[in-house]
Length: 483
Ligand code: UDP
Image 1 (cartoon, rainbow, N blue to C red):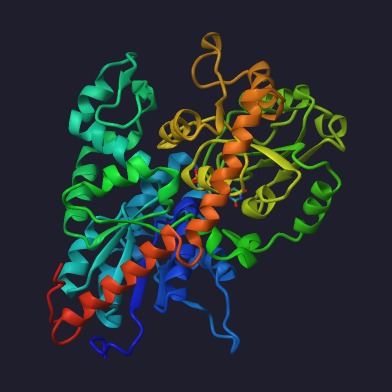
Image 2: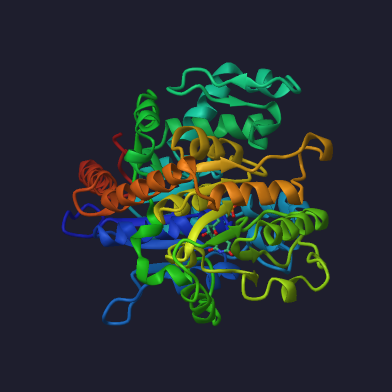
């Protein structure tokens, strides 16, 4: 059956259990389905409420993407917090245990793949062991990295230079070598991923034996870097994004059940002038201290601009984060959303004129796709590098400054106010950022349309995967991947 060219390509997806990875992977799964593949997403039962609502149904009621639930083995059940089965539902302190539980899914996933014999596996870069599983089954594996080509190039350069050299110099800013732009980083801005040397090595090795890398980005955003990464001798890259555009009807359901309050939030935005509201959100994982929350609250208030602020609630977030009487004081000009907001739906509203972001890759791309200039406030992981893309390469962002006196980790209220005013204010530089953001939005949409660069990469990938299956004699278990 698997070698019958008339059958749809059967593709399995195994995302890392974190909203910033699951959301784009589900979008990519839907893209594959749209290009004719029979697609299955594999995740743990506790993530079903996140995944199921984002999946469309065909006219006959069947889902466009199938879902297979893989429970954690009993032996690691105690490592999974009761608050949820993804990184956004637990505290940072619980991450290490939780990841050990996730890695214990290797055996059950292997059994599942042997039972179902798909034609291709798309799995997160954090699961390098899936390359060996795919090789044993004789099927191609595609690696999903969260971020774009710019970050991939920066990371490769740091690895080449020797991450020890980069991480060991304590304070000296250093230039990233071999890039088309002059980009500098502080050692503290290097992703903590480089501390896990063994993990990075395993990822690279797994990548070398994989079919290629799927990148949630579009060529026109970072052409120099897309070309540079394509020159990597062992890795074939496919730029298939921005994947948030793949299903605009479902954008309110991305990453959660649909919110009963969406209508109210949209009406609030409807009542505001075009481009007048700043949207503030720090993604699904960031934990800000109580003091930082207060500075942010006071800084937004003092900016004098209208704002819509999404505050993550639950795991690791402080219980008392707003100054007394704050919501009453800002009523009418500031709306605070507690919990999960449908970001893409809100960002796309014409009243939103700017985005204060932690520069997670999905948020970065969603801001660009919505055509909004951004105030970049990176906190961790790859966010410092994404910030450089926004401010120094694409020219659509301002950096939120931190005063040395308070320490690198805290941004004072005055600095929040200054960043929001710079972002939302008038003047030539602000107008230029808006113009560029609109241009990127138009390019993003064109890339995803039939004939656009991302559409073509996706078409090309499907053809190559089909050809790979046809070359394979005797079905999934007997053949050689033939890369
Ligand atoms: N997101 C959302 N509503 C929220 C918080 C986050 O829809 O209230 C989505 C956001 O649109 C993005 C993802 O969650 O798609 C966060 O990913 P990102 O890479 O920006 O940051 P991370 O959460 O991984 O730090």
